[in-house]
Image (cartoon, rainbow, N blue to C red; front, side, top):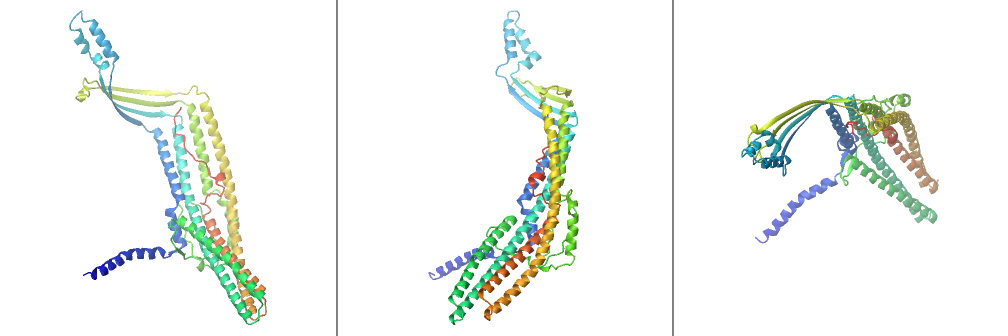
Length: 514
């Protein structure tokens, strides 16, 4: 029995450790991630999109608030009041006491008087129902409603713009991580080549075919590759941290990126047609299935020539247009303060004056109902209305200037995006040939060095050229993919000059005359 207990305890401990071991293995397993999956995940976890949706919800609430100015307003009240001292009760008591010599029934007759009961009652209970309906506001309410609707439409455009920006950010972060993987591989390969050269020099030195100087130089060359290798690893870690943040992954979640940027690009497509609806995730084909098209340059030139026509369809430009319309409606609402306002009101009350704390029945309540028409006209406001009109006119001028700046910025960015795509295409095509030639040159230099025909300096220079050519090719492929995605999302992206193109916060003027 005693020997069975330790065995049972050990078995239970092992069974308890199994879930933790499985969790640890699951946490350390790299998660495969494609660009399409990353874009789909970012659409539901982005803070920028959540902020844009919150702004749209706020604008929708302001629209409902503005619309309520044309609807009837109904309210109800219920008041209970106890009077600690009542002037009418004191007057009744005083007059009743002074008249006591004339007759014994004067006190009771004055106390039973209904008017005396109303004014001298110690308790009052009032139930009220009030309603008001604006009949004429001079166009102020309708202008505020239109301004609120335009602000909501601008907020909806902001959601589309935020979704496009998130797609571009995720695409750029994804390819940055892929590029960092490629640069680490290049740095490791260069370090391995330097190590192989060092061993070869040490071997030839041991047989007397190489000098100590050549061995030292090979060792220094090898050691100089270590900082570049360490730097590439640091850059890769930062790139993955940024990608995990955008996709809301845990900080220690290992990822395996399945899409590559090391192959040829697709031909540049034409600029997509603008849309005012929500942007959808665009599927980007993996780069390892792409092929070079001879019509690339012609397609890119056509995109460049047509890029300026998308300026008015940019999301920021459309928001600026909405900003001008909102400012115009706010100016109209402000000028309406000079016009008279007409409204109808009604007030229905049931009043009770109980002798005790509360009335005994509904029969103790007395009705009171009034209906009225009211008109208000500002005769003198001390210059307040004139100042508000001047401020609203300045707001229209500012909105128009922001629209002009947004159009200019959109035109510039459209041309810039198309030219960057053309440059990225040309750079990538040039880097492919350069990398192939550099690889061929290094292979020849390595053979020449082994055969003793060339020097170590020639081999080192060729290795550096190969490393630079491979890195340039990887960067060119990354820049090409990002440039393609930027041009594809261009109609929906916000302007880079946010201060110039983005309209200010638009809040409709829904207040009343102060």
